[in-house]
Amino acid sequence: MGGVGKTTLMKQVARKVNSEELFQEAIMVNLTQKPELKKIQDQIAEQLGLELKEESQVVRAGKLSERLTQDLLKGKKILLIFDNLWERLDLDDIGIPLEWNDRGCKITFTTRKVEVCSHMKSQAKIPVNVLSKKEAWHLFKEKAGDAVDSSELNVVAKEVVKECGGLPLAIITLGMALQDKDKKVWDDALLQLQRSNPTNIKGMDQKVFSSLEMSYNYLESKEAQVCFLFCCLFREGYSVSENEMMKYGIGEGLFKDVNTLEEASCRVHMLFDKLKASCLLLEGDRSNSVKMHDVVRDVAVSIASRAEHGFLVKAKVGLKEWPEIENVQKCKRISFVYNEINKLPYQIECPQLLTLFLFGNHSLKEIPDDFFQGMNSLKVLDICGIDISMLPPSVEGLKNLRTLWLDRCPQLKDVTLIGRLKKLEILCLQETGICELPKETGRLANLKLLDLSNTIYLEREMKAMLALVS
View 1 (tube, helix red, strand yellow):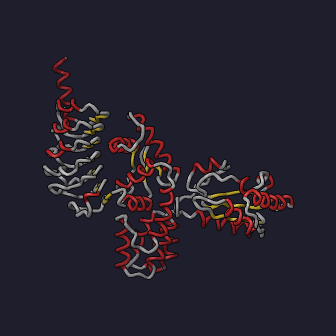
View 2 (cartoon, one colour):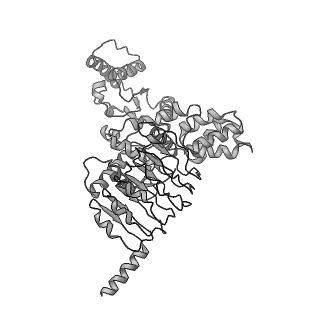
View 3 (cartoon, helix red, strand yellow):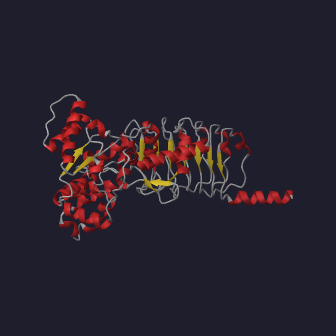
């Protein structure tokens, strides 16, 4: 991923091969997302001591190839490093001789995209992982100074390092920003990191965030971008399953030309693979799941909170009540999951809201009757794991709702109102207290998935009915 230290590693490789005389030349070419062949040729030529005055790219390639071929004939070994490769690079167009590899010369490159390795027909793929806890602490201490070992700062310093998730760029940036600062500055920095909003810390926005955002910007499809941003709606460290993303994606209509659950499942699998191959998502802790690196999630939250996306994410930040929301009318996706909210406002005007996540607020016992009155555009509602005994009357006004998730609401027994939600496609009632499905659910003509797993009282009722019939 961006900021993991690929460029630094390649610079060290270049120094090492020079000092040990493994190669006579180690040429490093720094690339942009949209590389210009002439600039690449200039970088190689300059390090060879060759001047390219010609304007024609083909002529320049011929001259560069001629020079490199001469070096090869003299038995000179050259290591050519392409740093930050985003797509396939045609070596012949640059002027790299075709017999390069047969003469003991080598090409290596760094990339954030696994598929680039395949496109370049690389003989070896070497993943560059984040630092271990011990390495991360050593690097942070080197940048922040020995004060991190003091009794005053040691605890908060270790928490700051933990929030970096072993990402060298974040560790270095934070270490330098907090060096010689007092305890209150450290405490504030930790709070910003824990709340996924560290943009006020010097260097985090222009260095760390901008570096990682490049990977997001380079995603080819809108589907992949929205899928990536959706993953930040969950708490830090959460593993999002393909099944979960499928249900939410169907609800919001995220997938193009998808008509069935199986097609949606395949699409999510493909998108997760693409995002993992771009180093934006990691393998999750559950089968068929993904999770976000902590700093990548902070970047995702930052991108998602922009006006055009309209996300508001406050996941597991200790909220006791519904917060004041600026420009709530413009919110499109809200996530207040895994908090301790025990009371909701009577009504909120959110005309553009598409997705609302409130799951995991175990202290919540009831939802005001008119709470959903101003959410006419809502498509996805997840209120799993709360202790409500009934749905509020305003639920039946959610005419555009497509995914409704009510799992782990054991006190919930009456779901009659759901029969009014004619566009509903996904209905999950796992571990609820329902004893029977109301006849109104028969009106849900668009329903694609009904999950009644572990509805104990319903199972008992059905067994009793079967026993009577037999």
